[in-house]
Structures are given as C-alpha cells and as structure tokens.
Image (cartoon, rainbow, N blue to C red; front, side, top):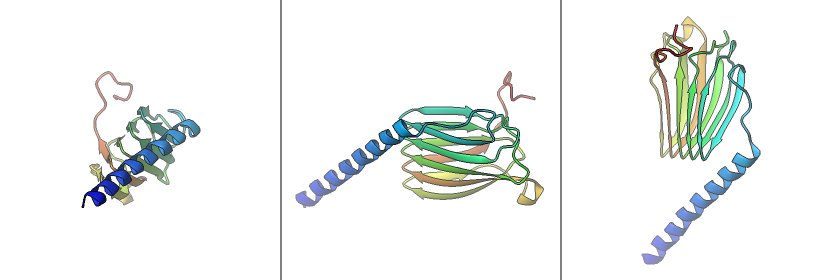
Length: 158
C-alpha cells in the first residue's frame, strides 16, 4: 500500500511539474495579440492576471488562454459582428470571467475537468440578434460569463 501511495504522489508531483514547465514555455513563446480596438484577439496570460476591455466596432471573437492565473474580459464596450462571434477559451489552473453587455445572446459549449463553467447571461433568444459562441475547456479552474452594469464614471456608462 505504501508503494502505491508513493508512486501516486510521484505521479501527481510529476504531472504538476510538467504543467508548470509547459506553462512557462507558453509564456515565453506566445505573446498576446490584439488590442482594445481589435475585432479579433489572441489573449494569453500565464502566471499572472489579465484585465482586457474591448471597444471593437465589429467583434468577431478570438482565443483566450489563462494558465496559473486569472483573466477578466470586459466586452461591454464592444459591438458584436452581425453574424455573431466565436471565442475559444482555455482555462487551466485559474479563473476566467467574461462580462458582456445586456442584450447579447451567449451560447456556451464547455468541457470541464475538475472545474466548472457557467453562463449567467439571460439571453433574449438566438433569433433576436447575433450570438457570442463561447467554446471552453476548463481544467482545475473556472469560467464565469455574466452581465453587469458599468461602474459609475466609467467610459462604458451611458
């Protein structure tokens, strides 16, 4: 029994070390691309946090990778493309929060392993306008999609 526990502990520690090395390689070789005005973004955060607020005029989506950290993606200042947008979200050992404007339709397709994903957006229905389609993989972490009013004094407040 002791040998089995020892082997399991070594396996778990080895897996964590491999994940940390992979995250470090990704951090060094894959920088974020796109800015607040970009219609397509490729956002990456590893061992840190990311706060990103989009003001895209024709948001098409993109990718978001969060490893060993946290991300907050604020899309309340963006206008979604009339055909909709696709956002591929990967969260590994971390948390991701996506905030969308009220009235957006959001469809979440998620695969979770030892984590969870939640779409708290009360969509008006897919027939009422464009849809943000979120394709998510969450491993040892969480994804939350919601709406909330802009803070007072914010450039997003109308």
